[in-house]
Image 1 (cartoon, rainbow, N blue to C red):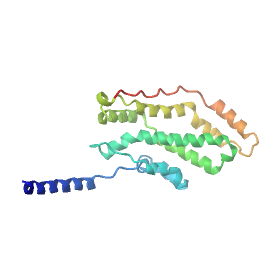
Image 2 (spheres, helix red, strand yellow):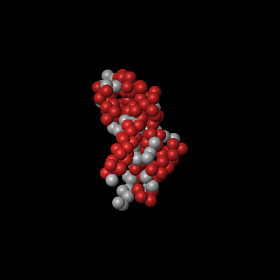
Image 3 (cartoon, rainbow, N blue to C red):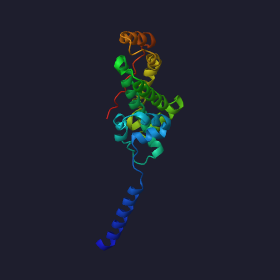
Image 4 (cartoon, rainbow, N blue to C red):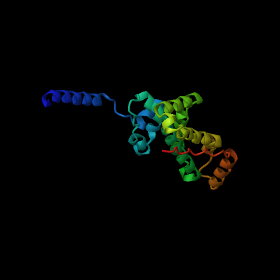
Length: 206
């Protein structure tokens, strides 16, 4: 009996191994960023030290079993957008100090903002993303995709507050002005607005 099953087992193991080799490797966030926004990603890579983008290369967009590369890209885009938004905000807030107001930093921050804007999906794209999540993670089992809606809301809040408008004004400030900090404070106070804080996602019961 062993002699009968041994060739079958060897054949199955060989077939399974072949399928594993044929399965494309999970992409990194850097690869997906280049897929979603090639021009904006290239602009960041044009002057960024590699360390500034390393977290995109380190993060793998792991696929759920049975999902395609295209579906996987849709599932991970909101997380790449959230990462890009956090990166931009980090650069933006550093501009309250005159020593950080340099041509390189301004260009760097602008490239970060362009990347966020590119990744920010339209209402139609958001609905497609939410529908895709409900297909891969059925609501009956996982609950509604509130975490994804929350990621969209966080980016919406940034634009609602007028961070992009404030940045346009900050570009025109003179970093050699001894009262730069006061000018920065006045500009952000008169340009930006307070917006409702997004409702945190609720944890679905296990």
